[in-house]
Image 1 (spheres, rainbow, N blue to C red):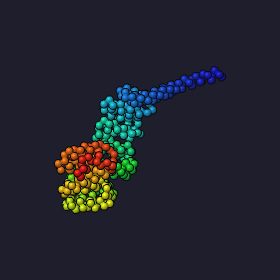
Image 2: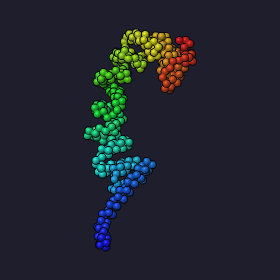
Image 3: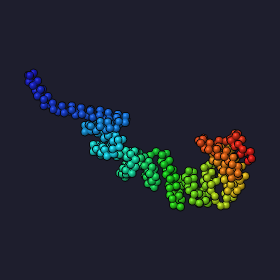
Length: 360
């Protein structure tokens, strides 16, 4: 009986042997392929592109993660400058793992963008977007590409979809929208281009001081002074803003005296505001009242020292023939402009404004 049992067991093992050997070989191939993938990525990290590519591709048909091996090989090929090999590896990645074709295409877009092939990268991302893929990686990269290509109309269309999908954080969307509107307000070269963009803004956006300043500068550049003055006056009435107040001093809306009178009315509630003093000085200069302008600029410098104030003082003093004093102001203006700190009140005006205050 024992001999018969041993004989049957031997026959059974001989029958199963090919299958067992096959499983052992397959497991060994998988193990070697996994080790090759890890070794290949180690070479990628070390920057050994050729060696990494060779290791990652030598066991592509045996590993449990062919997608990772193909994508790693594609990256290595690009780093070598072989874009054809890169594209072939990406194609193979889709073939090896069709269930993750989306990840392959996102990787393709990243590699194309890094290679400077912006149009091709944009094409891949737009195709993903049209397919209804709203991954944060896709939308974020598409936004970056449109900004780099300065295609503001296309970004405006995309932004509407970004608001609906809410994939990007709210604060990021707000920042993007402001930047986009600034670009749109300044990008349209038509005489009324900025006004057309302005008219499309929401009420909240038209009350944004940054967007208001951009639009007003555009109006000033185009000579639409009356409209610029009206918008600034209303914006400042809604909320005091130093940038808008300074900008008011660059507007030349006839009659200038009426504009000056309006600005002087603000001084009752903002008597020591250096931005307002700068604006009043500019308007006084427009009316040829140089003494009044000089006094206002000196007072502005005492209250809030800034490079802009010194530069204005220098220009005025130079027009009065005070070249040496003007040069001192120019130097101090440059020094202040290199200091990122906010304007501060002067405690020693004689030191900050040497020779200028003496005769002011």
